[in-house]
Length: 426
Image (cartoon, rainbow, N blue to C red; front, top):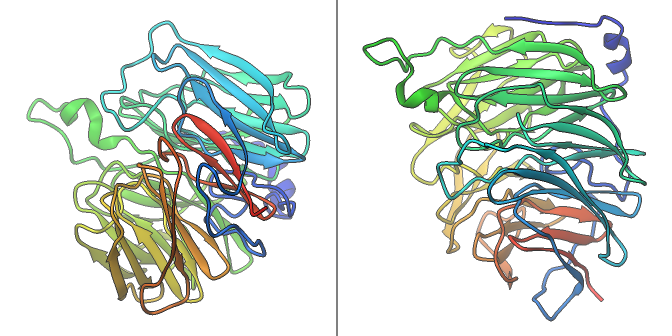
């Protein structure tokens, strides 16, 4: 494990991670990173002709979640050939594009190798005055949130994504934490938000079991990559960064990158981001032998044998969409449309319902509702907190969802494959 630490940062993080404004959606899956929109009154029904405040075409392609603050919506996009990487700023009130900013260029990007991912999948993060955009190894930049001026750039953070970048940035106080789980190297790194300089870097220490007879990784290291985004939780008054990787779940100290604990498993290529509910970290292991696990986060070292409270496997475990939890119940939707409600403390299934379609975008929870966004453009809204499935609405927009939702006040900000929408009751 290689680590670079600037000691003064420990005190600067002591007060905690960025506190969100009421009207802000600051990162992937929101201010808490768990897909919850507490205290909002989001719309129940919409269509292309109903409850659409505005609809704006976004050029090129991107699956990144929009972020929202101070009347502006930021998102990223890339040309389909992966040669130009851009950021867009949209006026929240009108949908007018304020800035279209090409930031990075790559003459020979690595082919994606699949039809699922893209070159602009990592979501940005925003705080007062600054927005941070990230394209994995293709580049990271900090922009002035008002003018769009570039404040700093990094294009020296490398890994071989093999099938495109996916992990979003984590904004924690004065640190911008990035995840690089490539086929060649796997590490997490924290940058100073003001300067972009490296504060610490921690290489993941993993005992790989994917070698061919010639001693080389199988499929060029394909079983080593990952796409999950970390979250920060508080345990016994101290913060932990929970980070899913291939064959292991890690907890790190966000102030200096120290590994706190790990749980090992046999799965690979995680894309589902963990959440924290009822004292447990709920995480999906990944492809291969997919399981949802509940892990107690109060251990140290390798806690595989001691702190896994429960494990649940099967074909209905999601591989892409991240779950939500509320009131002792958690919800997950599989890639093929199996929506499951389970007890977060035990993993016991409460109900399971096929809702049709395929799903990549993460779930959203607000009050007594859970929203599930399908690849075809259908959104199913169900009642949360019930021990039986109760559908409240099915809504549809053109072209479909790959990006996870954002929230602005009592409105939804939804990115389809071609457009950005603001959805609100009129």
